[in-house]
Image (tube, chains in turn orange, blue):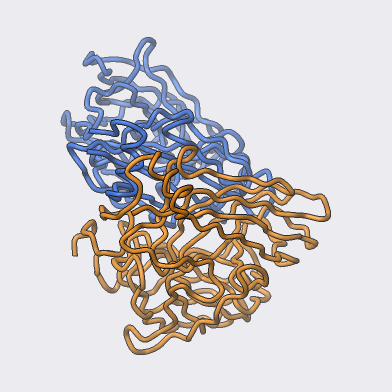
Amino acid sequence: MDRWAYDGGGYSVTSVGVGWPTYDDLINQITVNGKLYPATHYKYIGAVSTILGIHFGAWTLTGTPGIGVTAAAGSGTPGAGGTAHTNESGSTNFPNQSPATKHLLTLASTAMNTVGSALNGTLTIYDRLVSVSGINMGAVATTNINNVALPRYTSGLDVEAWIEITTAVSPSTPSVELLSYTNELGTAGRSGNAVVFSTTSPPVGTLMPLALASGDQGIRTVETVRVTVSGGSGAANLVLLRRLACIPFITNQINEFDFVTQYPWMPRIFDGASLGYMFHNGNSNASQGDLVGLMRVGYGG
Amino acid sequence: MGFTSFDDLINQVTVNGKIYSRWLFKKAQGTTLQGNGIWQRTWSLNGIPSLGAEPAAGSGTPGAGGTAYTLTAGSLNIPDQSPATKHVLTWGMNGGSSAAVADGRVAYALQDRLVGVGAISIATTGSKNLNTIALPRYTTGAGLEVWAEVTTTVTGGTTPVVHLLSYTNSAGTAGQVGGSYTFPTNPVAGSMYPIPLADGDVGVRSIQTLNVDTAGTSGVINIIIVKQLGAAIQGAPYAFAPRAGVMQLEALPQVFDGASLEVRFQAASTTGIDMFGSVVIGYGG
């Protein structure tokens, strides 16, 4: 398959939608036709974010949206492993509007912190595509993934694989590699170099991206992953996701990006998208507060 | 064919889908950087995209040395869209280490990697043949920079010195001689250094020879020719630092067909950091 051929699901490829032909039309669609969805987020970070420089996911945290669904395990049968997410419980999601295309207009967030120490970092929203549970982080071993088909971005272009810790790892620093995956071109049997976690004993919620093979630009399916260095104990999901947008956040200050005029990005939110939140942590204080914010998604047509 | 208006940009992006939003992850945690103020490459780092190959060696034959980069594995690249022109709409980076907040206070620059020559020993003095292959883009050489990338760490407490012994500038004048550059003591693999041009020159079309004036006890370098796209970003630790290409500062830097983009960063310490980012490129036509 041509890497750049339109597959009906990808973005980063030439696709035809029904967005806004002009800025005036955007204003008209929002204010006259009401084609706008605001969605707030509130996630209680609590004491999970105590390690500098690590990405944490909010999928398992209480708040708004609530805790996300638990993924099914990997499988020995190709195409049978894990859970595909479409307007998933625990995600931020919006009604389908096809043929109109939905786009992120703004994203705002603050990290409320009651102890006054800095909580600078980055909030990234992503479209959670497939999750696969059952990776034992406590042993050097290969785990079958064989994920179900991607529900969106079906070629796999720009789709990434992240390890999401679901049971705390202790006491060591694990390392994980994509042992066998199919890239965005449909080439099977690809493998990436091992990635060493950036902290010892990563806690629940830690997210770590896995490396691709040189020249690859995405993942269509993952057949197997391998823990190359044991963390001692712990368990993890493999999450296939597409990052959509990110903003910096500053302690107790709201920070908002306009993705139309300020940073003209307008990332598309596909029908069925199941948006999750992750943050790049810049504080080691255990008495953290909350991640609170708002996104606005509009559509034309 | 770019964007005829801001309205057209919105139309091309949201109606015609003429946008690429590419994401980066580069892992330098676990590596040792040269230190505060010294630039480092990401070309050799694991991640997304993953590491690129080292370039071919120089040659004694004019135009035969090294590797030209066009949509090269290891780079961030997007498909050709000629006659439409692609432009950076916004890009940004966030990075940090798990060791100390200050490690993440780095600057980032986005550049198009054009030509590289590898396997240049700086453990011996004298003239080294480069005779770079033709530039694949920016073919006059205007606005291009020359950098040295250390691929094998220099040891023994030595401070190598090099200069461009003979190059052709962007006006086509051959035999130009650049100023000397003194490396820091024991430059580590992955660090990179800007190599001066001759007074008055504003670019480089080809390099014939590099001279090692003072050798290191050991050490191997690449010489690369790059085009920086827009201004660098000053990152804050862990916090996404963006640049806007349309309304803010950047004036929509063009990404030519075949571009092989990479990010370099100016370290704040010797501790490696993990880096994340995005580059958003749109096109009209």
